[in-house]
Amino acid sequence: MRWCASPINEGYTSLLQFSELGLSSPLLEAIAAEGYSDPTPIQSQAIPPVLAGRDLCGIAQTGTGKTAAFALPILQRLAASPRRPTPRTCRALVLSPTRELASQIADNFRAYGVGTPLSTAVVFGGVPIGRQREQLARGVDILVATPGRLLDLIENRWLTLAGVQVLVLDEADRMLDLGFIHALKRIVKLLPPQRQTLLFSATMPRAIALLADDYLDDPVKVVVAPAATTAERIDQRVIFVPNERKRDMLATMLRDPAFARVLVFTRTKHGADRVVRHLAAAGIAAAAIHGNKSQPQRERALAGFRDGEARVLVATDIAARGIDVDNVSHVINFELPNVPEDYVHRIGRTARAGAAGIAVAFCSDEERAYLRDIEKLTRCPLRTMSAPPVPAAPQDDNGASDQNVAARPQRHGQKSHPSPNSANAASVQRARRTSKESPRRKGAATASSLPAFLHRPPSDRAVKEGLGNPNRRRVKRLRENGAR
Image (cartoon, rainbow, N blue to C red; front, side):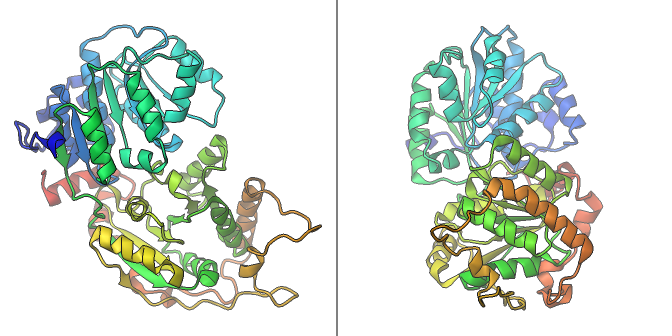
């Protein structure tokens, strides 16, 4: 492909120390304060060409440190030519597909740039636009944005992109999946033609190659893992189970304490809310995060998951890229995605920064075609595991199981159920009370009834490094795999 003309070793080698990458002292001090000592492969290979002003296309799995790979050199380049931003402008623009990921990227820029005079702002939808307009009125050095809110600000003449020096398209494949291609084209037309453009993606479909061909000028291509591969340290299994038994199967598995911090993925928003309500009825505290939730609700759910208030987070794919939580022990695909690339991004929430993780897929007969597509894409057949014993679903007065009651259509004149948003908090509270009163419900499976691999303890390596410190795990991973 012509946009990949520059080979990865064109004057850039894989280095093992941040001090060898040409970063300034304030940035090295900030890196040390964050606990980093050695760069990851994507960082060691991307930082030198970005510092040199080259366009770059980076392909790497989630959890490999892509944000630092572009944030550190951008901070250094902008700090090297300090000037006060013009009102209603930005010098560097980072586009992100989701609110959570945008907020995370902005936090990283602030942490790495603490020793510089550079300013960072983040804008996304779901919150009042007034405060964002006030931030931009003074001008900012670095702006992290979702495409929709960015265009809102531009159309209201609260922002102009005429002064952008660096454009970053982060998680570019996900932006295309979410239908942002037309928004991207509108945004790029408003940018100055003389700029540095960086594109990062976890997968490399043809659409991304075409995007890079259009937007990048003689880029360096950095690939630290083959496109659409999954992390080596994820133990992937599949359980074949009918749709109507999935929720009981999930509750049975989650009663085992080995499932310390679990991400559950569903295909739909309403499906996520139904799973949360079912788990709450089973005495398991869980929260949901998806597009129908307001931004404060999404932030509270994510914060509760990080803090351990709810050990189970049920999410849809739209939120998957923004979930960066340490020590996710298990990822459960309650429903297989109909887009196979989404599977890669889902299970990438575990085994981050060199840690180990477990991914379990529930597959019904109707989803076997999705499973074949996933295995074809990843070139990794999922091992089949036998289903743990599931107690019979309780029945209502009419003899129908709870599993079917949740999905029963509403009849004319029947009282409507509470909205998922209002029911979610009540479900979590009810789950906490139930778990305190009855830690082991009747018929629940014991830990020994589950397959051994599902509740095996962390490896000695992970214990020595400390599960709470992803940076130390990142160092160990680099030493294991070697800088590429």
